[in-house]
Length: 198
Image 1 (cartoon, rainbow, N blue to C red):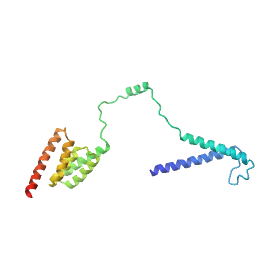
Image 2 (image 1 turned 45 degrees about the vertical axis):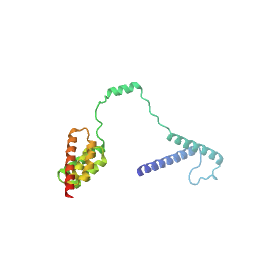
Image 3 (image 1 turned 120 degrees about the vertical axis):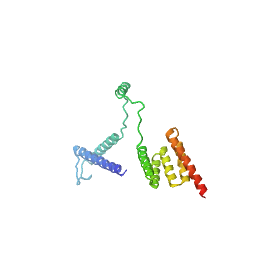
Image 4 (image 1 turned 120 degrees about the horizontal axis):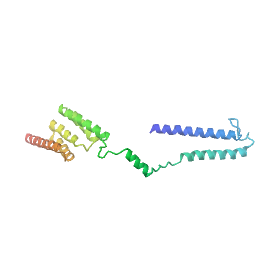
């Protein structure tokens, strides 16, 4: 934002400086005295100079102002040209657009969280997986692994909601549905164990 402000100020200074230089050249060409000693009282052609300079100044400012206000309209490409372009560069039907940068970052964090769980570092895994969810809340694997981390820590109450989210996000993928179902069974066993210990 600041950078664009300085660009605007720079170009405004260039514009104003160029406008005054053009005005100075035009006034010199018209025979007016220039310089610091030239005042209106010293100029014998005051009335003529004043009207000429106003006209010249108005013309310059109007020309420059209108040049900046020109609206650029897009050029309409003829239909024949569009057809030639589309034939020259065929589209690949069904080609995936690829995951967004946020989704890619989330997948990397998911993998990192999975490795941390395998290494037994559940606290670190929870932190990483929460970041992955904030980047891509639609990735059900994040919820599954987050539930797994809480389950490994022995917190069934925290694991249960993430297991349910994983179940809803991973619906339709048979392999993940089986993993989520087995995880739900382990959560239920842990909940029973906690109830018996109370």
